[in-house]
Image (tube, rainbow, N blue to C red; front, side, top):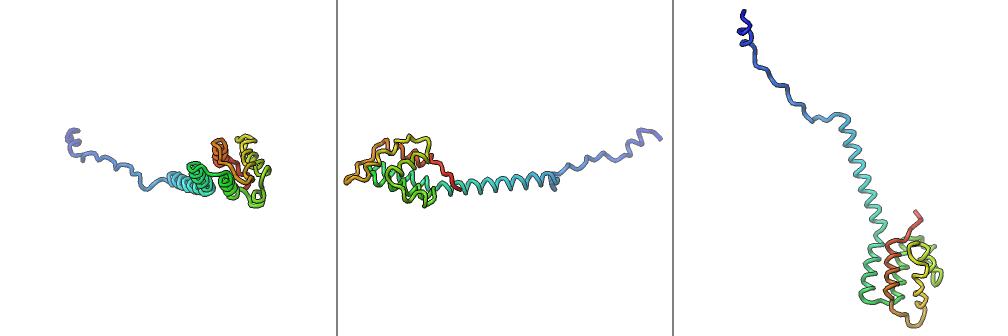
Length: 151
């Protein structure tokens, strides 16, 4: 037989079937499971962190409102005390007043000057004076930056 004739009797070549992505290989399932677990863990951590610092956002909103209406020192002191009671154990904060309270505010936020809350001394006078911009700034800085050391 003639080789040309034999070649003409052959069926045309078929291309192989394309390799499919599905079903996934076991390694991809592991990667997918780890990615989902990581995203769920990150979401839970962010949610916990947001709930844990919600009092700061509320206190900052209240501070802005006090600043716009030029509040008195007793109102600012009340706001700082409320924020501290949300952040720290009740037994540690509730009984503080005067110099001890000012020392607590300064020591719980190292980035605030130790005398930043000195104006709160006039809080216990008959007519509390309006809050200065310096005290408002110190209060805002304390609310944003104080360090909570308990779990």
